[in-house]
Image (cartoon, rainbow, N blue to C red; front, top):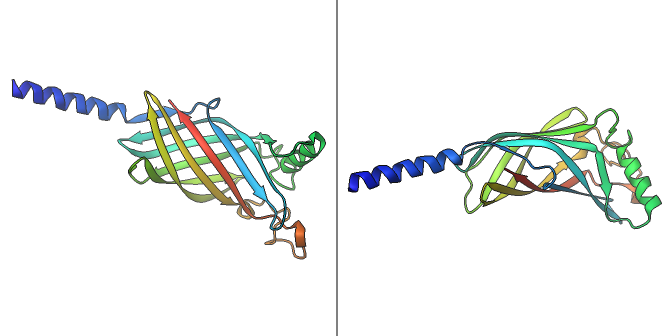
Length: 194
């Protein structure tokens, strides 16, 4: 009887581990990506950008890989109230001064792995591609699971100057004064996978 119970427990545990492994597909409609950018002195702007598609692979409570594609043409602004100012800012962000979305319509994050999740937290590593430039990124992710749905929350900060996004950057232009724009862009991501 004890042997049967032990075999049953081992089988159930193995099944649970197998369910925790494999490929999880992102839900773009439930995922949110919020961006933040600001000048060295003065105004800051925020908005959203849309996820096209993506997936994560996991083994136990470790992320082993993944890839996410972001629609750069979907950039919107959420802090400005004046529609003309909002349209002007978004047009500028989409132009060659910034992200050149006609030529570079997709940005990509390739996840290469993570540390083991402990208390729902892990360090995730990957490579971010913007305007065909690729550089490594590392960030902390929080993981919550409900049924077959997992939500990963993370703040990703990257230096736009490394991706040839030069407008208003003190690394490329001098005497910008109050018009200098910070090179760091912050993304707050809430990723939902199933």
